[in-house]
Image (cartoon, rainbow, N blue to C red; front, side):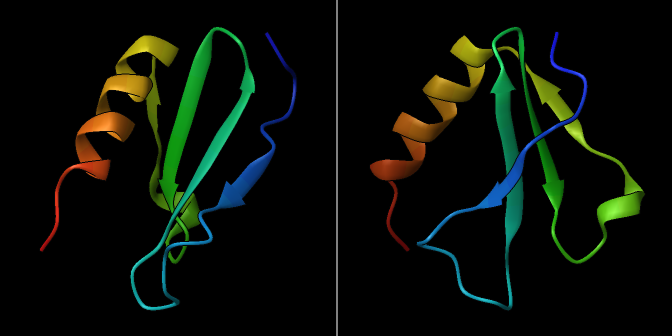
Length: 61
């Protein structure tokens, strides 16, 4: 497990609605709200995150 999450934002998100992702731990992907960083985070297995990302690519609207 990696000690410190390496948070980053997507280049596709605007400044009004943004999440940050830390995927530098091979066992866990973390997701948090960039405007409320101290309000918690989701922790997902990498396979679950990959399914979500693929689903999101196909969703427009």
